[in-house]
Image (tube, rainbow over all chains, first blue to last red; front, top):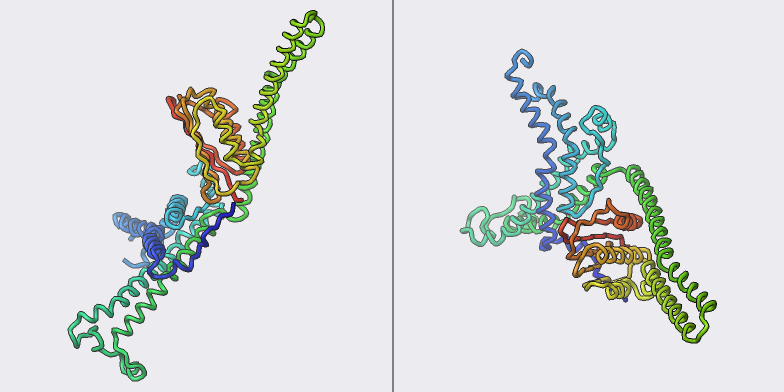
Length: 61
Length: 382
C-alpha cells in the first residue's frame, strides 16, 4: 500500500495571516514572564533582604 | 536604594536561584512541551538532594551550571527577543491599519490621509504623505514579525535543548544504562518464555504422545480381536489429533505464519476469533510495522487476551491497535474483576520486559473490581 503524506512546509507558517504564526507569537509572548522568573527571584530576594536588614542597623548600617 | 548598597546581597539571591534551578527547569520543560511540542529529556535525579552529599553532587554537576546559565542569561535574553517580536507584531498591525484610520481623520490633522508630509529632505526626493510611509512600514514589519517570532522560538528551543537537557555524553551514558537494563530484561523474558514452552510441551504434547505410544503398544500386545484393535487405534487417533491441536496452539502463540504473511491485522483477527469470550478488535495501520515490532505487538495482545480469559472473569474484551506518527499504540481492556499485579506473576512483568526490549513502554491499570486497561506503546519507525 502506498500512502502519500502531505509535505509539512514551515515556510507557509511564516506569513502574518497564518493562524500558526499568531499562535507562536502568542506562546512566545506568554513565555516572557516564565523567562524572566529567575532574575525576578534574584532581584526580589535582594530587595527583600535589604528591607529585612534595615531592621538590623548594627549589621547593615 | 542604590546598587552599591545592594550588591553584597546578590550572592544570597543567586544561591536561592541556584537551589530553585531544578524547579525552574521543570517549569520550562513543561512550557516547551505545551507550547512548542518539544520534549526536553529530564536530568538524572540526584538522590537525597537536600543532604550535604546531595548538594555537593548537585553543585559539582555541569548540568546544574548549564541550567543556571539558561535561567539567568539565556532566558532573559530570549525574553527580550520575544518582547521585540511582540512589539514588531503590534507596530506592524498598527502601521498596516493606519491607512484606514487616516481616512477617518479630519483634513489637516497629523495622520489625516495625504495631508501631512514627511520631513523635508524625504519629501523632496519622494513626495509621499506620512500615512502612506507608516502603512508601508507597518506592512514590512508585519511581514517580518512571523520570521522574528519563529527565529526567537527556534533559539529558545535550541538553548533549552543545549542547557536544560542532558549533554550528549550524559545522554549516551543514560542510553547505555537503559540498553543494559532492557537487554537484561529481554534475556529474562526469553528465559521465562523458554520455561513456559518447556512446561507446555511437557504437560501437554509430551503427555499426549506418551498416551498415544501406550495405546499403540497395548493394541500390538493385547488386541486379539479386530474390535479391540479398532478401539485401541481409535483412541490412539484421538490422542494424535489432540497432540497436533496442542502443538498448533503452541506455535500460534509464538509466531503464527499468518503474522509473517498477512500482518498484524489478520493475525490479531485470528487470535480474537479463537478466544472464548467476544473480543472487539480495531486495527488502524496504514503501513506494516517492522517484523520485530509486529511480533512483540502480537505477543503482547496474545498474552493479554490469554490472561483475560484465564483470570479476569471478563465477559468481553477490546483491543485497539493504531499508529500515531512513529509510535504504535496498543490498548487492551476488559470488563473483568481487575486486580492484576505485575509484581505477583511473571506474565505481566514478562510483557513489560518484552515491550522494553524494543524501547517500548508497558502500563497496566487494574484496580480491584476492574476494569483492566493495558496500554503498550512501541516505536514504529518504518
